[in-house]
Image (cartoon, rainbow, N blue to C red):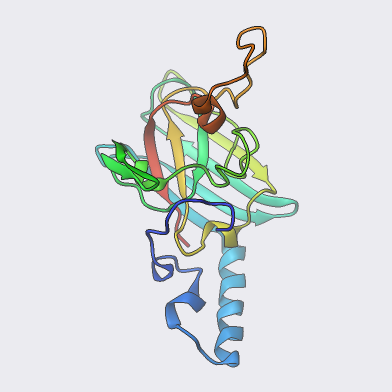
Length: 206
């Protein structure tokens, strides 16, 4: 995707929406057919299953095209209560105890998904992959529905895919008042909003 800086790790053939990329250079007629299939798939939307680092399914994410943008609907169970940062990450690979594609010396759960969509182009809070916080009740259940015009379904189903990510902590969106930090937020805050580790990840699929 144009805004993502991470290296592509997932082929287009693994994302069913990107049918043109799987067949190589076809004829004009084939491209037209592929475009029609992509349009139909975009109308139907994209889905993702959230799993934790142990591989346990903890929720679902549905993304669909609506008037004004892309609707993101999340349902989770079995997560720690409280607010959690929720973002769309640049690579559709969710591997526990994996390396960060941009810095292999960094390892941790779901680092294979790279950074937020658009990370590096702006500070956190303005990334196209930034979304409202997910609130989880004491029962471990939570839901979120939001509409964003910063990404389309085609963006999300590009060559290296996309991952929906739930973080361990609440997201401050790099909003640190000067009275607390006269020099402004540090690099970590500007990149992630101090949302902490990655506790659930879902590769987005068509």
